[in-house]
Amino acid sequence: MFDQQLLSIPGIKKLIGKLSGLAVLQALTIVLEAVFLARALVVVWQREKIAALVVPVLSFFVFFALRYLITRIESQITDNFADHAVDQLKEQLLQQEFRLGPRMVADVGSGHVVTLALEGLNQVQNYLDLIVLKTINMAIIPWIIVAYIFFVDWLSAVILLLMFPVIILFMVILGLSAKSKSDQQYAEFKQMANVFVDSIRGLKTLKLFGLSKKYGDNIYRVSENYRKSTMSVLKVALLSTFALDFFTTISIAIVAVLLGQALIVGSIGLLPALIILILCPDYFFPVRDYGDDYHATLDGKNALTEINRILVIPAPHSEVPLVDFQNWAKDSQLDVRDLNFTYPQADQPALSDLNFTLHGDSNVGIIGKSGAGKSTLLNVLGGWLQPDATEKDQPLVVDGQAVDSLAQPAWQKHISYIPQHPYIFAGTIAQNVAFYKPVADKAAIQQAVHQAGLDKFIAELPQGLETVIGEGGRGISGGQAQRIALARALLDTERTILLFDEPTAHLDLETEYELKQIMTKVFHNHLVFFSTHRLHWVSAMDYVLVMDQGRIVEQGTPAELKQKNGVYQELVNEIRGENNAE
Image 1: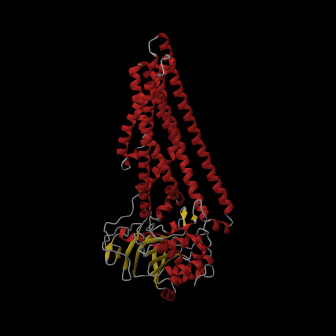
Image 2: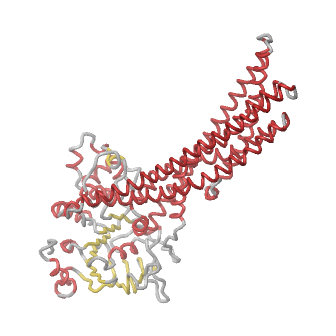
Image 3: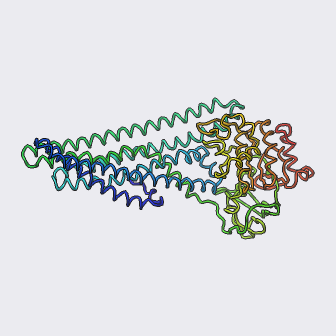
């Protein structure tokens, strides 16, 4: 029943040791509490003087308080461990997501990744809060109690021991059924999260093409499947609770009948009989407690499994570390030489024989049709994809140092990535802007907001920068989300390398034009890689890479590309009059 993946969490063995010791102490307090309560009842039954009640009653309350204190200590230790473990998991997950980059998000599903990083971690915390403590209590407390009962009345102990495996067997059977139903529910949840987030992001486009109702029906179908799978889990959970209550009640009833007969014939005294009856519910309580919360922790178990699955995905890494690289500067240079990249299980390379050289604060446009390899190249430049190994010189040279990959902390810590749909998490505007630099002061945040063109929008808000946006807060438009992403990049002045992946593809032309005026100002003093299929951006670029089927078919300044009258000009002619191309 104890999930083996829990043993991989740092500090879990130390926690198990502490909780095991406390569980032994708790079992002893339960026994002593029952003993003194039974003595008090015997005193009352025998109509002795009130003075005779003082010692057993006070002793009962002392051990009752100790039991409660131990329970509180167990809960506090477990809560602290769960908080610390989830904080570590969150950091590891975010670091892994950054190492793997946008490609992993696309493979897993953006909705699922966001849900996992927010709600999923809360479910994991609840799972750690409950499952470790309850498993240890179930493994220790009943056996100490039944051992004491055995020395009082061996027949009662045998009955309790015989019923315990029956209860465990039913728990296992129902638990397997619940796990199967929960796995199905979690799969439906992942699908619902991905469909919902993707549909919301593309809502404007869906409305434009008259497909919003169709996708609304799709969301309803997916959510209805999730509702049905949730109800299936609840049915099994209720059946499990009924089975536990039924068998524990039957067991206690059998013990009570036998003890009653023993009392009648005089083979057992009133005191030991009362002690056994008082201890019986506590004997079964850890099992019932575990069973009641088992179903509530299945989502956390599934979330932990998903997180661990992401954490073990091989991340790009470099065999040749990038040393002595402080930051991108005006005299920096990047050389790409015969770079190739092939996706796993792919027959053809996604990038083939790429060669180009960039100097200083260059604004580099990457253009081409869909599927040309623009996003793949950005992911390689961000260090999120590993170039194919080569027997020749290393494919990347940064400031004269040849490396096999840009999956380098020295390089990646200076990168800001701005996709089509920047994620806006639940929090204030100030917190969202300070995403890369949480310790930034208010003046720096206001300066970044001003540079990103958010002044007018924030001035209209009663709470200004403290306005809550994102989940449960104020909704914002796509253009405002992009401006917040720009403000994030501007706030951290150490991030001098900007990667834009079709940042305006989902915006209308008017919003895009306004955003363009702001973005082009941000380009100054940065190395910019700007992937787009809207060719009017070319006029804002210093250098342009024209891609087709994973190859760079043309490169040069915008003026040079116009003079060549080649592939670039063909692209311009193809979309002229449709996308406001220059």
